[in-house]
Image (cartoon, rainbow, N blue to C red; front, side, top):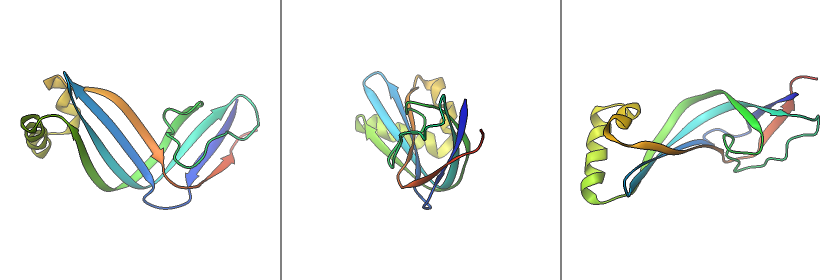
Length: 125
């Protein structure tokens, strides 16, 4: 197995998206990070076929987050009625997002997208 180091070339281009659903409602929590580093594993020594905009968690390779650091922004996107939206906003003002599962919300999708060119370097032989 071959291991590759993925490092974004620009700052503020690593974005984590988590979508939560409950019944017919959903919301997506976006967090932008200053930088990050990831490992990617391949069976051959051929450079992985990935490019700018890749969802590093859901590409065609096994991957690992080494680090994502320095949260720069966060934003919420809603697909729900106004009452549910207010509940979500109040909950997040008072509680940690990790506790939302206690109220019936389920993490339905998680992505980490690299929105810039990046360097791919093989780190083993």
